[in-house]
Length: 286
Image (cartoon, rainbow, N blue to C red; front, side, top):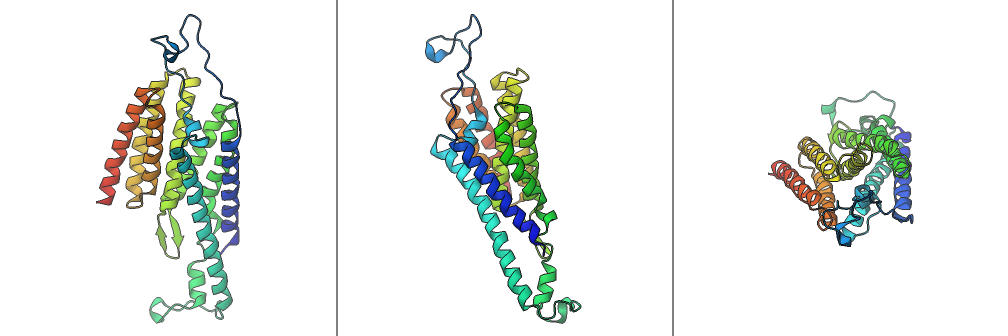
């Protein structure tokens, strides 16, 4: 069993958690949207017909103000800590088995020759914590630790890194966890992937709005439609492991609650996305 994979994974989890925690606690003055010449500032200042102020969707996940979204971020950290803790205990268990494997260098006995020996179990699980097994999650965590710091000054770079983070999280969740000859999907990794999907598409929404000039409502509708279809596809592949959909629905409820009084179009589309994902969730659990 390679020690490098599990050790680097634990280090990457610590780096990701520390970076996102520091970003969430970092004080930053909110920039007020500037009004175009001849247009009203906002309807909330007594000027009907003005567009609603931009919604900072990535900020809802990275710098949550309410308990609901703060709980989502905290559960993401907890899911990563749980996954890393399992890897640490597996390393410890294999280390004890290695100490007991007196015949480790002998030829493996046939499977039907009797109970497996410690050496047999060691060689059966020698690929469990290899670097190749954990590489997608490690790369996703490192990208996730970096991209929030580029969000304000370099949004394109931030989006590309967030997409790399999402790719790593999804690859880890869909590949599952190797346990000898078995490969099992993990609800904790699914939860992390669900959070990553929401954050990545939130950045995508801001990019469409700020860089391509797409109206805020249209950008949110595009991102939510693509995201909900992608979420259904992922959940159908994960089967009964529902951590992914729980995280996505949790985050969508937070978006709807945060935008219901400021942008009804985004809140309405979010509710539709929740319904779409809930249908897939019911299908895989019944």
